[in-house]
Image (tube, rainbow, N blue to C red; front, top):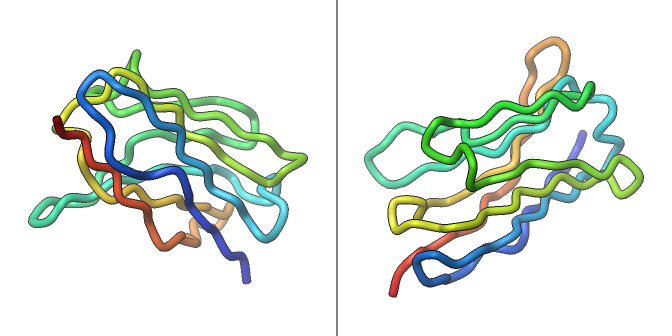
Amino acid sequence: QVQLVESGGGLVQPGGSLRLSCAASGSISNFYAMNWYRQTPGKQRELVAQITRYGSTNYADSVKGRFTISRDNAKNTVYLQMNSLKPEDTAVYSCNARTDLVYDYWGQGTQVTVSS
């Protein structure tokens, strides 16, 4: 069983930056992909960013050019650097680890609020 623990959320003004971290209890190299999702009340969960074990990355159109996902295999940690934040980025951000057999592990989520 793998545990994922997110940190780094909080309140930030529009235009500001935050860096989210997702620390795994096991090796993240075992997973096909590490993902960041976000969800707001009444909306479907949205895939924000993905990084595969090969280093390939994918982003939602709404965050391209502003968010960057990265991984540190030695620390078993995945990061989401969020710049130029907008009020519409406000959500609970959750870390996801997906196996080759498409089994998902989830963190508990961290709140990001973008407001003046």
